[in-house]
Length: 429
Figure 1 (tube, rainbow, N blue to C red):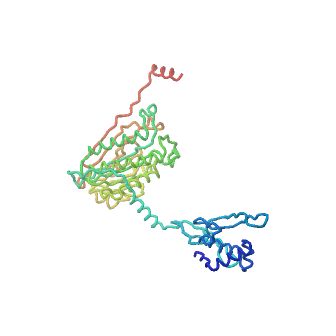
Figure 2 (figure 1 turned 120 degrees about the vertical axis):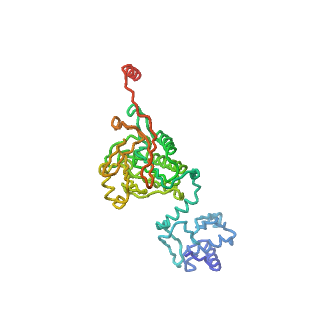
Figure 3 (figure 1 turned 60 degrees about the vertical axis):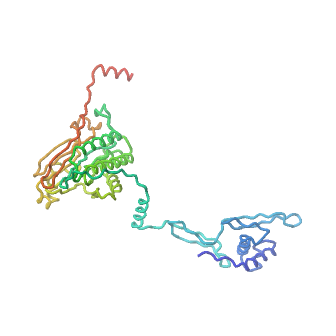
């Protein structure tokens, strides 16, 4: 509670005693039986109200703390010094978002509050209040969004077109003399944007699209630049923040491109051994961007294995770092027993191995998808398979009905000659 002001009658009584005591506060207080500081507060109030002509009123927000007079050799007032300080008392305004934690008061002999110390802390909001504040903040922002074309005229609700995206390895650093082709964040982004757009145009129009991220979307998981489990050192082109940011922007553009070709888009992001936690940035970024788009559905599950049913086809997906291809059919049969028995066709897609491998296991077509990324220095000479993107179209009653491909030129290295080596040696010298 604020300290009540001293009545004017009491202020004048203290002022007169102060004048009679030679303008000294403590002697005046002794004559009144109160503390000298209490006398000073009465005088200060008259000063602030402008009722005393021979003292300059304190500026707004301040009060007179002390008045010192200079006397001449005859004992007459020759000058006066007034000391001001921040005003004490009045109503305290608590800053927004804060709560009072502790109050300490200094009380004078007359029982009045002379000084107060107020400690305030941040108010502790519940998670629901925090979520509401974030929602309100987001609603006020002018989000920049691309615009998708209208729904395609030719559509077929029975079709599902899968776009398996395996091992793009954004920020992988490869040099042409080691891998046969230079590769970095900018190169990977431009390559994916162009080839994915071409792939969509080759796929059947209408129906539902499934953007299936099979892991290792980014080459590194954090700025340690090593694989999280094996601690294998990685050569990268950009820090993790720039890598994740570029990956989210690239994926957003890919969804908009799919919306121009298909009725709706389902998104599923799986972690790999390189992006064990950084994959979260991709799925959350996509979810936030498309959270109010009814034509986009995002699966937020965290499991390493994912199963999806489309009519008579059961689909499984996994990066491939925790389960061997020969084991994937068994995992599907064990975890999806009901759907396994009710479907006619079964397909399990994975990445991790960077080249196409197709196995028929227990009636399941287990397929490793190719990548767009060239081998880095560590894998140079090991991964020599073609690079491509593939879309797989399923019909609810007929199973797989078509595929589309976009191929890249193979990585070609040039053999050195004695003449070339001689020129290189001369240049180095």
